Length: 117
Length: 117
DNA sequence: TAAGTCACTAACAAAAATGTAAGTATGCCC
DNA sequence: GGGCATACTTACATTTTTGTTAGTGACTTA
Image (cartoon, rainbow over all chains, first blue to last red; front, top):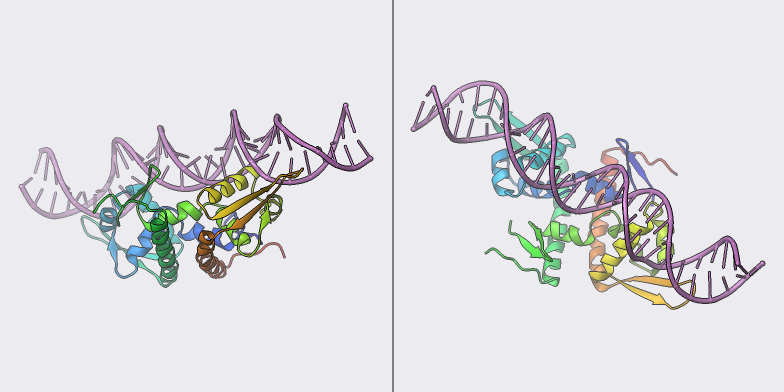
């Protein structure tokens, strides 16, 4: 398998590159939420309650920089910021969906418990 | 999104669980190679030349423990060990393939160079 | 006047993933 | 007897990722 270089980073296969863009703990959950509507920062915070401000902010910043999401700031007080998925972001949705379904299968196979609800 | 618990680990969504099983730097590259034939440890080493013995060994061990791969030891000297993908492992192949194709798309979109060859 | 809201950021701490170097057993070949 | 081969493991170091705590500005409400 060939190697790829981007921004002084070395990748050994396409999957590694894909995961550098949409991987990590929060990026897919964010994209998944944005897939059919805009979300405010505070709404994402409430929904992804286990994510700290810092991590949420960091993930969003990278998604914006990489063109998966756009950010709109309304000059109000207190401030309002809305995040919207882009076309590039939408292209990730089927991939996330497949991983999600695969994860659901695995959860069954491994008989994982589902503590709440 | 609900939470799941397995082996004292907490997962917040199915994708996170899937990635705990087939994620990391080496598991998908290994499964991808095993998809249509058996491989010896040393063959995998040669092919995944950037992986250290330790990481390769660790990834294989976990894949075996989780039932994605089986390991066959031949009592010869020097030893020979063969790794084979299981049915459970085969179920990961379409997922890996999709991630791979998505990664290839992204590499094009981001105009990433391909230094060798 | 004081406290609350929102969307962050900075500094630091902890945890997880990965890398490096060296060592193990057995037996063959020279 | 010395070196080589295979498939590892162990101890330790470094890097990367994630978490924790505290603070900011401006205006609104009590």
